[in-house]
Image (cartoon, rainbow, N blue to C red; front, side, top):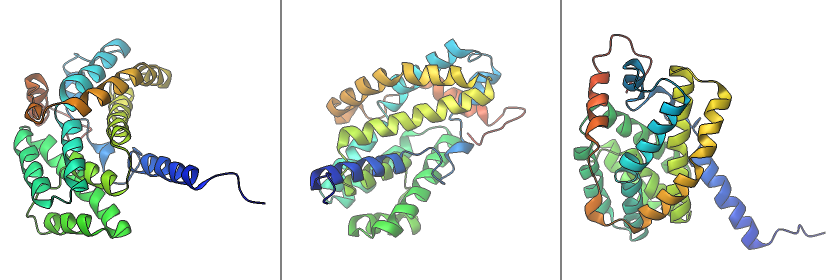
Length: 239
């Protein structure tokens, strides 16, 4: 008896599994070791309970990720669809310049480099192979959002799902770190994650409509906190 799944259904399942895989916070690229400035906010008692944690997560998604990594992901996705290697490398270089705090810049490079090493080996796609070669030769930086965008394009994941999964991954990482740092209860973390899902939908739609010129809109307070992280007396995270 033939299984009731059609070819289209099988492709949809494959796309879902690919999204779950690339957005998995436990993917071995080192995301767990970076707080992206949250540790500074906690030590300065600006983030100290569930409410302030939710405010931090929402602000990061709206004022940082939307105009920086999420938009960079969309642009990288478009370059990959067009086979525009030069455009993608220029975008990667621009992302490098826009990440002023050293720790955040280096974290993004490490995550992206490890991600493309995982997928480059397994997909054996000509475009990704070229990107990986440039990363390994240090001709480009390999920032996480750029690599994520290129890989999801090659995997034929719809662009809205690529952006949404990236933002969800960012929210999960921030909330997981806050549970440990503040600290919060696990249920507090889940409450916050549920509460930001509608925001992620809205930001995904917004990101699809953003002008190219909006890339890199500055979040000065976050940059300062990320720079201060280097001088904290004690640290659990690398950034």
